[in-house]
Image (cartoon, rainbow, N blue to C red; front, side):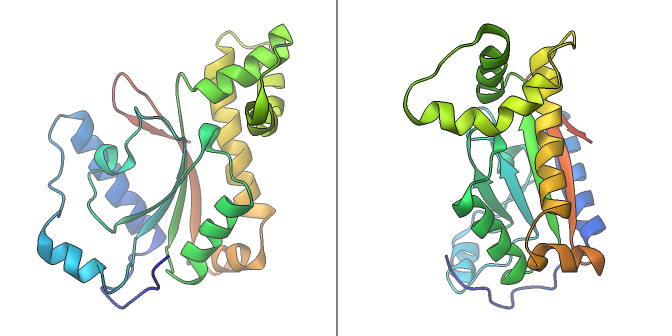
Length: 204
């Protein structure tokens, strides 16, 4: 990962969140904000990066963070894994984005019709067994499915509970390099769920 360089002043956590909210509203309205993909921008980024937010999302081809938030190269630091889970490498990446790149905002983004969450729901309701690393991958999601088993929309409810689980982990049960800037108001951690059909991000 490239080290940071002084490209611009970072926004406040609320300003960073507003950029994402505004970008998604434009995306939903089929009026996406223009993204800077120019050669000049690429040359600037070759000298270092200063993203304004870290996105912890699901590795699903239908969820393109840059597109749904209307941002360009170098603006989001993206950590993706099925079910927006975070392992050691993922957590280290998040910590790097805060400690070194000084991002003011972390967004945990789930989405409806999530295959990893649906698989966790099948474990709970059908005692399904999955091969290889898939079983270990969805294991952290199973408690969210268990707490949602009595809900009408089990998977949708579990998606939200799984996002809230990760938000709580980042807010309360992380290293001091994440806890301390939150206490100083320099970092905010928020959760959201992306609706595939509408393109809308619902903030939790």
